[in-house]
Image (cartoon, rainbow, N blue to C red):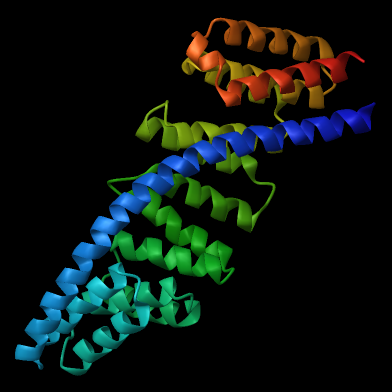
Length: 294
């Protein structure tokens, strides 16, 4: 019985993750393809213009730097590095070039060289938040987690335009340094929610993950209730809550959550009820209900 329940719960989890992933991926791919087609076409034109300018002023280090940046944005890293080094050989001593070389080595996954570059940059500009973030990212990939944490702590304290991905990146480093340190990771999530708004979805989702991983069962259930209250499509969240309750062998509460999921589906417009994702969810609800009660 328990083995069958575990298998079903795993399948249900994969099903929901797959549905959500496919929806998000479709949107992202559509936007990404449209944006990239336009952006890359524009970059190609800009590179051609810059190349023509270089042909007329072959010793202008500024032009090589500018084309290198365009190549970097166009994900042509070897050409970008060639232009950066050419700019440097022609006399470009601007510290911004050192930052770009470090960033490019980081993107090319040459982390030891990237660390040397960013260290040189920070020797001159020690309070540059963007550079401290790059330093933290490089150190993370070099598995120097404590040093990475120290650098990212500075970023968190000084960054003006903090984004959800910055918060999540910081918690990744926290847990890489100590994979049981959910208390601090959750404190960072709460700080992010204060700064960015309580309904920042990425942070609320990660909060749920951390609460479950830290076995804070009642807090995790409250987090499921948060999603149920805040979002219109409640049927999925009722089901996910039921799934979690079933894993905890809290069958009565799981059955209640499943009934609430059914009610939420019944209240949908007919056009939504006919959606494949909803019909598949109904099957999963029934399967979980049957398993719990058998």
